[in-house]
Amino acid sequence: MYKELKSEYNLFAFSRPNQQDDDLDITFLKKDLFILPEVEEALEDIDIVIFFEDPIMRLNRMTQGKFYDIYSLIADNIARASKLNGIEQVIYVADEISSSETVKILGAYGTPVVMTETPVKRYGKNLSYKASDYNNVRSIQKAPLPEGWSVKRVANYYFEWLNEILYNVINVVSENGQYKIYVTQVDQPVLIATYDSEESVDDIEIFQITGGLLSKKQPNKIVRLEFRRLGNEKEFIMALHDFEPNLPWGIYIFTQAPLHALVNRIYQVEMIISRHEYRE
Image 1: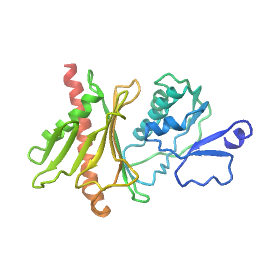
Image 2: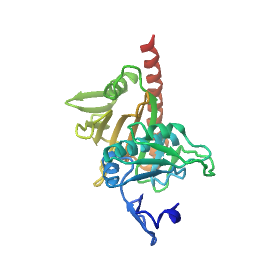
Image 3: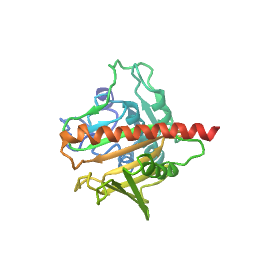
Image 4: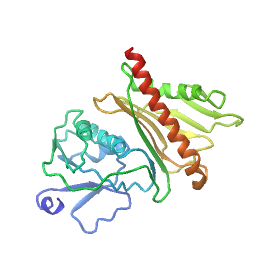
């Protein structure tokens, strides 16, 4: 693709912060694909976006989540940023196991999307835990959006539900847009989630993890808990971004990490039940 396009077009590509250009005629966009404002900034003055799923997932962090859930979030960022910047077209490079759902999300906000006709041969895509550098954690889960619910309601209910689901074990205190999560017999909160009103827009609710015993402070990263509706779909994503645990990694992997995944899985089931109850 690069060889065919380089003589006719100015090429840009998302990359890691330390990516080397290797003398290619490509301008690297060293932006975080998981942060919408950074994607919006990256797509300024771009005409066409080529979207190609990468099953290798070079995230350099521990990741919890299904492959397509993670790419649903990336696709939603690309789609929203494409609408904002007036992108002419998104080209989705098909492979043998391409997701039509990703294509729908890419076009959900009005940008024309085309899929290539000849699928690229690929191997299977599997992702549960990826731990190549153990510098921080990303956790992404998808769940059905109960009929009649807004994303704001889903986000607020999540903390109410946490307070109730493990009664006398977890206690959630809400005050002025901030949730403090306590566990039994511990005086200090284990996590503090503060509502980010500036970044919470268009069916996206953002909470910053601003403290707590379980979270390590990072000088150059903002730990975010995100709830987001995906395009026009009746689904939402809940995601924890750039979380660095205070526990030693060996302990975290076998304690807090699976517990976090289990809690979110139970919440997914809760959303299925809530959707069913609403219909009845």
